[in-house]
Image 1: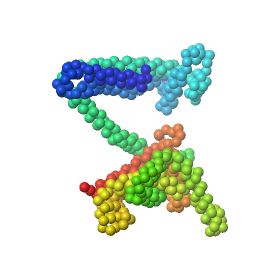
Image 2: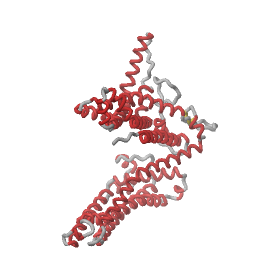
Image 3: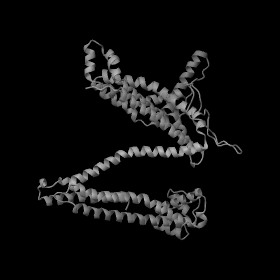
Length: 493
């Protein structure tokens, strides 16, 4: 039985326990629920919780422990000459065994019999099933794959039987605990409170786990490359060195950081005026009908995948800027050469700015509309025009929230990858010409982790150093945005 079907069976047992719990509570109370401490639904929920939670915990623990145990037992069955191989080669052999085992599960009994009889080529059969093997499987690999499949099947059956039995036993226990003065409501609410605490802790624990994993790998990188060379280096050239040299590349962060800030700044130059003016128009000038149409259409931009923006920049915006610059240069100098490259800071900044417009407009619109109506009416009542009210009353009142929204939007721009890859290129260099290509930290993280690489060289580990740097940068922007909002927020009654 698959895990999904097992969970369905446990859910059915839980539903039956809920119904039986209500029936038992109603029978004990003589259909007078006022004589019981808790309502009937709480008694049913108590029985259902006992029927479901222990079984779910067992399935989770089993799913984590069983694969690890099977892996160890399969590796122990390898011949001695294989078990003494280096760790990388041993892992490769075990990966082959798992691929063979997966492919053998796709074969029917007749094909398995032909393989066992030596009349069929296992590598060819698995390739036909969509499981290509790099090398021809040897005898010990096939035996290990059979053992892997056998232990996996035994583990699956044992987990199914154990989970269903545990669910039934716990359901009976939950039903037997129901009594007239049993505090079922208190027990159920304790479980719900625990679930809420776990749910609220997931985000914190996930962030802590990400930071710890990145810091551990970044520490390995800094043990190979001095931190001052990384943080203050002006050359990014992470190539493997030739024979006889002591260095393994140059890992200067400054060009990548400059490109990240530069492209993000250009994007904000496009996004902030358009988004802010759109928010002011929709909040103060647009009719209800226009607002109901314009606001959803503007926010559609936020739902477009960034890769689509990247294609738009690569196919439309970049060539347009290149061609229009060539025409301008031809009219001014007579030489129709373009001074704007198709992949440039300007292209990436413009397209990224278009992507950020809905973030700026939506956040700013919500902040402006939150300003009390009495301030608007008071300003208009004193004779101010609507534009003067916006400029001298609404914007100053909403300014802290708008600044916070812009800083959060800037952190979104700093983390963008696909638009930069297609619109600004991958050239890591120090320059201030917006018509030339540059690149960002996120692009180089992708480049360094592309391909079949081992996390043992500085060329790969540098991605974690870049990641923790970008994490700190965006974290500082978000923290400062929250500080601005809380420090200068206006309180209205």
